[in-house]
Image (cartoon, rainbow, N blue to C red; front, side, top):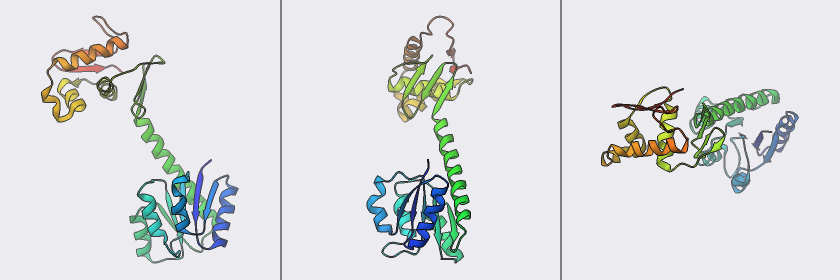
Length: 229
């Protein structure tokens, strides 16, 4: 279940928002002071925050700025400030949406759902970009793990970087110079042409794909290497 942070110094409003959110099966962490939130923010597991703007000691804009220093979850401002410049300022400092008091609780719930859908879709897409799964190859860039036919294979840092580039460009020829640049950056000029060949050979050995006609990493003579889709 998603976890929602609610911060509003008006107890009645905070309690009402909590009631409606819990009615949608959200877990709610409720605070009446921005200062109390800052004391506990690192211990909170938050998927979305609803912040009042006009609060004593620390206003919602300042709290939003503090949160954005470390966290990227969606933030919705709920406030009595109605000037257009306030809405613009709120969005510019990192808020994702803005509702004006008095608001309909069901409208706020709808905005919460919309922001959570957007956030989850973005995070899911981002996660998928760092995992490649095809033809028995499963390579996870974030975890730095490689599975071949469901068996975990330990790779060196260089081997992993080469395999990731080949898998990322599967079906296309990756030129030897591009592999050098992608793995070693500006230092690639210091490497000799046999360096890539040695690492490719080690990869093939670990994948048990050695011989004159390897099934996975193909040599395109005079150009580079590729992995078929």
